[in-house]
Amino acid sequence: MSIYQELIYSWAARLPIYEKQEAESLVSWLLEHHVGWRRTQILDEANESTFPAKLFEDFARLKTGEPIQYIMGKGPFYGRDFLVSPATLIPRNETEELVHMIIKENPNAGLKVLDIGTGTGCIPISLALEMKAPEVFAVDISQEALKIAIQNAEALGAKVTFSSCDILTQTPVVSELDILVSNPPYIPEREKSDMHRNVLDFEPGLALFVSNDDPLIFYRTIAEKGKYLLKPGGKLYFEINEKYGNEVGKMMQSLGYSDVQVLKDLNGKDRIATARR
Ligand SMILES: C[S@@+](CC[C@H](N)C(=O)[O-])C[C@H]1O[C@@H](n2cnc3c(N)ncnc32)[C@H](O)[C@@H]1O
Image (cartoon, rainbow, N blue to C red; front, side):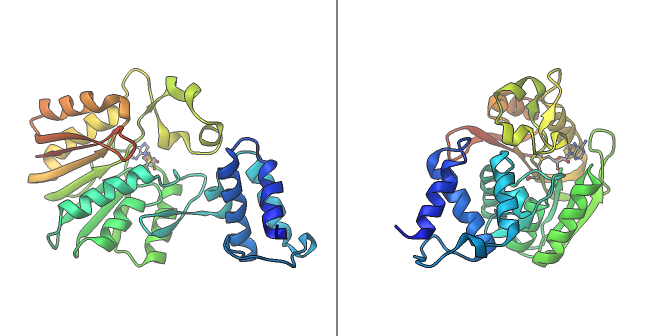
């Protein structure tokens, strides 16, 4: 066994909060990040004393359950790396599915798009780079998140107009949208006890939680505003809590949207709701 493999196994064993295989890939990810070692490389001569101090500091953070994306300051989304910070949600695979669907369903050039609750900007930046010459806008209530989103757009060369907006009390200054998309906070506070500590302790509550009394508040508010922001025939796309597929679908119908669909993600859970104004 190479020293590289030994190191991965022994460090992974010190991460009991993760399954064995996941712990091994997290350690190898850190090693690649700091030492440039690839999993596929067989290294015969490696000596821990030559490792940078930051590697050990980051490993200590990993042991606390801190997500590796926060430790490394970046996470992958739709083929690109996005800067993340404690003010932003870590982009998720489910959201990649939403972005993929929007790109496939909307091949025309020059479409006008708004993303509400943008976080790292992973949705609007990916759409700006993958769709044909779209005009893309994005808002968030968090100034800190917006700073990261702007840095991501600059680093990735995407043209997105970002602005600050509390969607519950304000309306974004855009109109005649072709596409309105949102992955808003959607976890009722009561579900906190079912969640992993590495989400609860490290990801921003502002990005995750809604009150138990009104878990659909963001969907209803955005769908109501969408009736004015979208042009006739424009499309609304939501990422949803798997538990509220029916309710979100019914709410969109009651507001007069047509072609309402609730779709499952790759794990078979209700995850995307779409409708046409
Ligand atoms: C679930 S996160 C989604 C982030 C990003 N779109 C993604 O998919 O990774 C929800 C986002 O909504 C933002 N948010 C929370 N309350 C908001 C509000 N009242 N108005 C606008 N944005 C809000 C949060 O700051 C957070 O960035």
